Amino acid sequence: MSQLNIKDEDVDIVIGALCSDLTPFMNAWKPVFSRYHLIIVKDPDLREELKIPSGFDVDVYTKQDIDKTAGSSSISFSGFSCRYFGFLVSKKKYVVCIDDDCLPARDKDGNFVDAVEQHIANLTTPATPFFFNTLYDPYRKGTDFVRGYPFSLRNGVDCALSCGLWLNLADYDAPTQALKPDERVNRYVDAVITVPTGCMMPVSGINIAFDREVIGPALLPALKLVAEGKYRWETAEDLWSGMCVKVVCDHLCLGVKSGLPYVWRSDRGNAIESLKKEWQGVKLMEHVVPFFQSVRLPRTAVTVEDCVAEIAAKVKQQLGTVDPVFARAADAMLEWLQIWKDVSAKSR
Image (cartoon, rainbow, N blue to C red; front, side):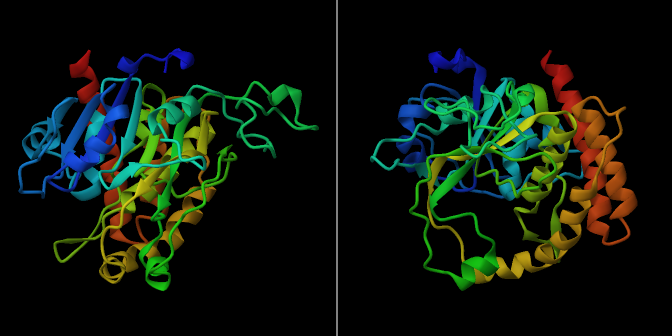
């Protein structure tokens, strides 16, 4: 990572542990993970003891740690949401998050893909959200801006969020998985693009990285769908958080990139069972997406915290009457800001 002028000590890798035996996962990533500090957050609902191999610099957080830090809030860190606790307690500038069902990918030539290095490359080179470059990332070696690209925009802006992709199992929703049970992703596209300003996107925490100092508080676990005491759509907060962070990035003139790096994602779960959980969330997305597409923040919102608070107020006002889950999400966003502020104050 020296060619990027970033030290390994500037990076945390966050892993949400949803299974107890992390040995195969961590050993597969050992050439990469052994260079960095790891934050492993155990799913509060996981009862078995974690199995973690030696040879890593690791801090493990459990339900006891979560309760001590955020126990008085209504925010749930169960299931996939446990990764957000890792974002909260990190003290590094850059955070990379890779789920425990993901293994290193191989590129078109069969070479091992260092996902962390590519994420940091995305975050430490400019993004171009205000005018699309048809040769994708103009800052990669061997490419540049195309004819007609405004010279006034060629310096780009800081990139705050890097969204990687997946080989083998794509991040499909349950209806698509059910209709295409045998479909697998085997096409490796060697490209990175900047997502244009004003364009929403479904962000997945499976394989992402972000500049925590710049955009950290906007990645938040707010929208949680629960019925009869059971989580209906455990990944709803990813979609909500992703649209929230994209609105914030657009407002603050920050960039979001998508594409490389790839990870190889293992099969997990049953599409039909997931469909039972997800259906209510699928319907709610028809309200969520138009809302975020229409959100405009005032000029007085000059920090990430300002932006999140403004979005929360608009959620309460515009979506709160549609379904109580949105009012709870708005409250959770404000609670998250307070928790983030408290944790940040203690770490100084």
